[in-house]
Image (cartoon, rainbow, N blue to C red; front, side, top):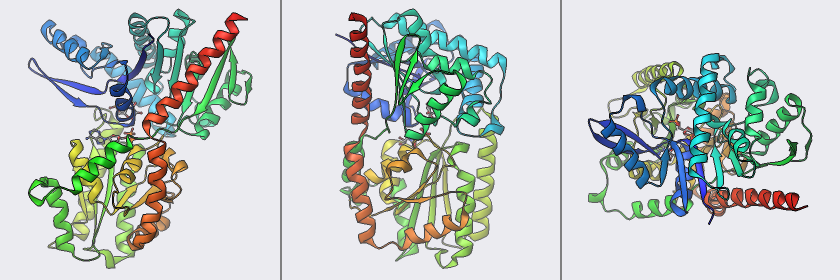
Length: 484
Ligand code: ADP
Ligand code: G6P
């Protein structure tokens, strides 16, 4: 029977070592949360990096790590410290991530890092070939592994390979600035099916294939190396039932069962009284998420509408991410400074405008935050999809709540009932916060209801099934082609 092989840079669990003791924490980010639901439900193997550096482990530690990974139905690709520096922190997160998110001024083009990126992609391909048979379906994920499809296809031409990009594919004018643009496109075209979150990303990719590789593209099919490659958009969903039922259970908790965080959140309402509101944002600490911009816009809102001072509070959870990269370090410093400045400027004896958490929180605490928030303020300056926006909606079991969402998030394409804003327009930003605070309950409920219906239907399971169905169809087309 054929297996599904999930391949991504990160495994669903991130390992760390304390002596010989291994600690596993869930990986953060849309890819890991989404694919985890697919992995637990099916008969699949997940290939990826454990988060540890192999050259710093003893033999006993290596054995323990391998055992832990096997238990989770995963297989590891080993990386050395130098590879983590040049492939992961380097080429993946100092070149591809900023470039694909339109932060051209952050993108570094370093030949040594490109060479390590190629070498690590080759290692991933080797591990895939070792763990798979001819009939298995290989599903490769994200920007860290753009060359893997071609590397596997060259070794095993009959294999069925899908590739999904979890971040935006930039417009041709951005992508053409990339020194290794041909190699990367050729790498991706090793797949039989290429999936993107939105139609725009799909279009940008096809345009680059046409203009850079000069390949024939008809509608969403590319003829390449005597193969027909399909390109399509598959907006990723969430595990809707998990978020909805966790929120429901949460609502049934007695006062004594409530977490410390929940009690703190409740205290806001007690102190600020009628009409008080909690506004929530949750992001990885990443410059694409528009965190400083959001804080400045919130400051502008308090200046423009001072009647909300002592009534409205912004709860900001920023989960540490890629903190060794200098652009991320600077972002953390800037965020700390801005939060300090605004809290210093507006705080009163009983009220601080921003509660800021820079840490990872367990799932139950995420649910505490989602269910307590009257408004979710999700305002990335650029984001492939944004699952947090969808998770917030899924937890609104009473149908109340307002989602303010940036037009620059892929999720905005499917969430028209949210209050959509351009995060760079501070007038619109502040006016929309006011509108959200004042929105009548019936309007909140009617918007949330439509969104919930859509999200429960297009959940992560359906997303994965539609991708797999489309990938299997490419397999059948190949068979017909071969038998002719
Ligand atoms: P990105 O993929 O850029 O990080 P998304 O909004 O698509 O952005 O995905 C973030 C995901 O990370 C969400 O599914 C969210 O629930 C999850 N998440 C946030 N904080 C944590 C945490 N502390 N532990 C595990 N997952 C988290
Ligand atoms: C985004 C990317 C993922 C990545 C995640 C967390 O969701 O699309 O590929 O895994 O961020 O980032 P990290 O660098 O910790 O893997």
